[in-house]
Length: 111
Length: 116
Image (cartoon, rainbow over all chains, first blue to last red; front, side, top):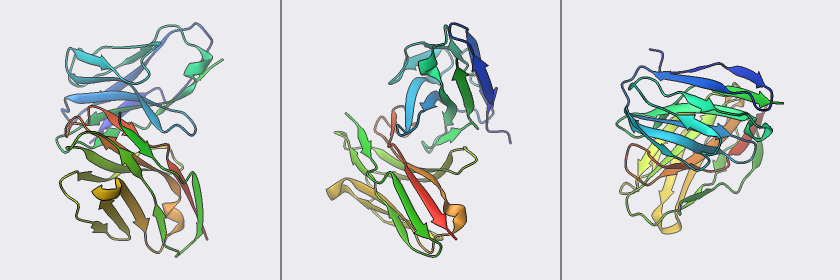
């Protein structure tokens, strides 16, 4: 059982480049979300989705786009990367007990 | 607004000591959920426990125990007889938009180092 799968695990970008972080889950969860983790700040919600075709902003959405065309997939797009987006990104899905299941994380560096 | 405070940034203990990680939360909702997650040095986030606001019973799971007190808005986590493998960052989290965690708020985390 793969759970939540994120790719890539590591990425280096130059300022202004765009990229997509992929996230897929095989647990048939309706709720999926993206977080960023920065030192001393815990995890902050970027965007979330409560089902296919439905997305909403979290605490720190600026500079990121998401879409949810299927239940399984929830990609996160950086349109024009900035150094402030250097972080570790986690995708998560939530089951019927409410706890979040996290992917392994993607470490992004923007130069 | 929701808020989770973990006042202990870092804790160091010697193996076999007991250690308590503090978590204080703020929410205006009467129905909410509290969680603890562990992030070992390998970086993944591991779910430890979920507690809803109507269940104030303390819970014990092996060497882990949790003390939920609504009167003080606290949800503390105790590790008994700590082991080196307990070294990790521990996050307390709050969700108050229903059981599907639509609006999780995480504390800043407490880094626990267990020394041999």
